[in-house]
Length: 332
Image (cartoon, rainbow, N blue to C red):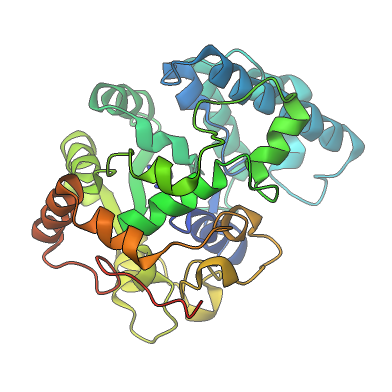
């Protein structure tokens, strides 16, 4: 019987880390390997056109390989019955600088073998997978389907608030940002084009809306609708019994998800810059370091591309999620 492979198609700043902790740490359903996000496919397909950006991600990966390798050799992973079985050479073939689909497959086949009966699934939770094009999804599906039962998972958040969090995270003025910390580790000369010195307001005014509907529709075509599940972030993390989004994920993965096993998410409820500082979620609470003015939200909401995408998702989903499409009064 094939083990389930979860191919996560993002999207970043939608509580993806909380989903990962729910499935890996709390439920021990999936093992994601040595780290949640390795960006292996992103690097392989070279969607980062700027050479400095590619260098940035490659150096981060290499630095992580060095760090993880040191931990592996020092016995840091001895209590993990899966990771402790890896050798340094196996680790380097995946987290080293040379990315390939062969290395990608071999890493997960090795992870699959070492999981034995301890986990029902393995998975790639890299948010940069959301950049994959249809032909690339098709290639990945062909690569994996002979060995795994491939399941595609996504989670979506109100598009405007998601964009605001992302651009706050990729701002050099945000000294708490994990990305700024990564830049300092790799050298300040390595700066991806997404980082900016411009005011966040000026940046978001010029960024197009991310089309959730198109991404899911492509995944349906490639993997089959029955093998694709998308969640609405604001609804999934609400503390309520008989949560329809939780029920949807339970049915999709054929598992039980007790409400007390769902990991908290700093974005739900959305408190803006006052989001809780949950210790293992700095990627979430370090993002919104600037206030989102209601007038800027409404300006974007009235923009032609956002009107079109909100309407498109409403038609696709059957309704617009209750927390989408209107400003939040943060009480500032």
